[in-house]
Length: 424
Length: 202
Image (cartoon, each protein chain N blue to C red):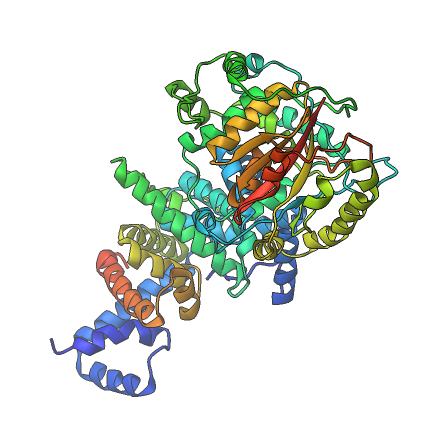
């Protein structure tokens, strides 16, 4: 066609985007081509009409945005939180495969100003005491919008007033849209632990430890009974629901997870203290030695970290802490978890841990050691949420240097060891 | 022509500070971000989808995504570029969803057209005896905006961003992740198509 290059240049010429030599050629062509002149004029009119279109007035989007942020399906919230803990560039799969990568994480609970505690400079303990039996929770109907928010507020209030574990905003913010959300099937793994041990929050700091029995078949049966549903398929130790109705539950916003994640609940602004994951020193040696004499040391260790941790929130995202964590060498976390029934909790932990390919080793009456793949630690912390306390310098009995303790102490390079003190 | 800059964020420094506050979890900062950019995001969504309700829904989703992803926003691009890029993606997804579910998203003429006096025009012919210049212009606008809806997605994207939102070629290239040359040729094709669609009416 005679007008071939020139037709393609018309649009650019309207925007003065034509290079000078082409502009000259085009002008020459237009002088002799009525068709192209006509076309150019038509384009000009179209573009002018578009330019004259007034911007459409839009509604205020903020309420709708807030609403959507507050009412995600709970498993999506969890998925986003987990994803948000990791550096952007690294997917969960990548990290699981990283053979030499080892995670060190320390959970630091930042004290709120209102917390009237003398040891305001060390992480503030938060206790979780299960109260309602599992059946009640499971039978809770999906909440209305306001109920969920009220519950969240209530729970958050409880937890936050003494320092909550996780600031919801940071986690949501760090989510990557590209990362696929967890499927409901995977999410069930997360849901099951909640269904059993951890329940409503109240804020008693219990003192006296109770005996922890070792895990056994009896425990498992108890666990099954407690959930009220024979939903575990435990043949391979993987906790998966075989009940299809559970999946449909997930499509509704259930009250159960919303309350369970009260500590991480999203929603209206609260000044939740920042949650930072940073590298911590190896405290394995400290942890497994006598705690009374070790209290000072632990407090120092604990105290040393928070100052580092407090600076972390000021940095952009938790990814910085995590990157450095990934490069450091040893795993260790000592947590204290207040439960009404440590046997139940142990069972539940065991299920979850084994489901993730980890190991649970009871250390003594009230302590268990968990070895987890490094990648799962944050998932673990979220599944059993809001309840961690870096132990105060009380004088709990020292851990025996038993074989099991030693075994637990030796982690393979990409495993994290968590020692959990279970007491009511 | 719509300006691509919001009133609240006058300088790049302001924007950087706002983004940083958002990344630190400042909720008020995020609210501010939404308010400063919602007009633009909604406008793009509306022009791309032609349906007000869908556009509002998509626009909200854009900010939800932005909230979750702001931690990764490295500020190499303008914030608005990033937001509009998300908008274009979500619009495309929304259209595909409708297509996949074999439904037709009703693009109403009235939804996509608004006149300078702010009211939604109706398709009823102007009954005044003398052709009003503004009425004629309004009618032309309606036609051309309806024609935009008929373009295929790649053509519509460039026309909306260039001629309705006033973006520079380079900005469009960033939003759509295309080379500038491709933007130019797509724009050319799109405008020629539009011209053919409205031929006679304008």
